[in-house]
Length: 314
Image (tube, rainbow, N blue to C red; front, side, top):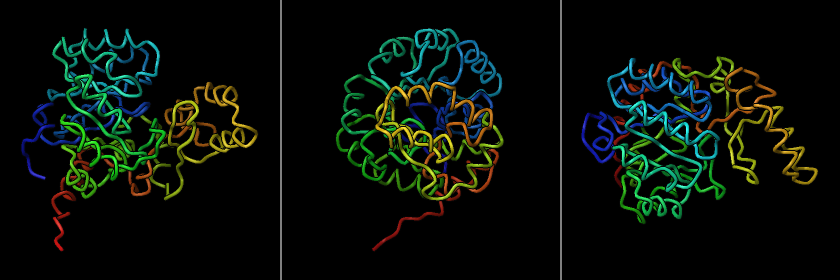
């Protein structure tokens, strides 16, 4: 891929239509600034940050890059009003919202000149995004790691259907770690891509080294979408996952599921490095990731693979 203008690069004033996802426990200022410095759009993941930690990450990111970057705000977490206030005070120009109603903060943010994208897992919610007036829509297939859709619609099915029903700039997410996959998503109708799992296993990601190394060892079938009763999430099958399965086996006790999750499991796994007791969120595409790489190398590989993928003819 050569530097060129399309709807995503123009909207966010970036060189390449590649967005580094704002993942909890991974996406601090180091990862976001590195992605932005490479010509993509780096996102800080606010969901795993107390408000003062978010402010610190935004300020450090501003010092580490003079390129555009944004903040991802998961609408199912607490302190939302305080998070939004910090974003406004710090002059952040791009916000990606997810896991909630796109109307919640879109108008408030846009009044301050902030570009807003919202993440959805279905065409129905993509249409709601368009009605809410967002600037761009991220359509995420169920291959993706972390919080996910209940319908288990794959990216290959989701992108062309969303494209058919909405006119806003469209970003594909879920199951994208190679330049060839990026090209496929764009052929299907996406204007750009959001990539999470590949950036989780980078030098600059804030996750624990145990977890980064674990990502490089995963094979097909090592992740599973679960917890649909609460908020669907794709995670690695480990001791903690098996404990959840046992709760299902004795009757899908929602209270027991909540109690098990309420022990800071995601932090324990991805940030503190407990590979058995922690919640480990990653996408199916992790089976293609076999090295921890610098962000710069990830970008170089994506662009090289994109250009080499070609356009097959029949």
